[in-house]
Image (tube, rainbow, N blue to C red; front, side, top):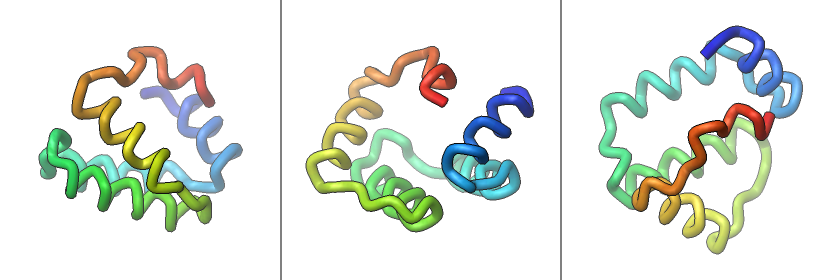
Length: 78
């Protein structure tokens, strides 16, 4: 990812590149097809950004990741 994407994310979420990279490092050591791991990641991101994520939304996110339904152009969301 280029720095422009990180800047857009930081502007929108107030989460800096260092925090994102630390989380990415943590994720690379985790099982991203495990529901509990994904739930922990979502909860951590929710805490970092100060945004509440409903249980319904968590389930949708988890199912999208587990079933490989995450769009390849996700950076356009930022």
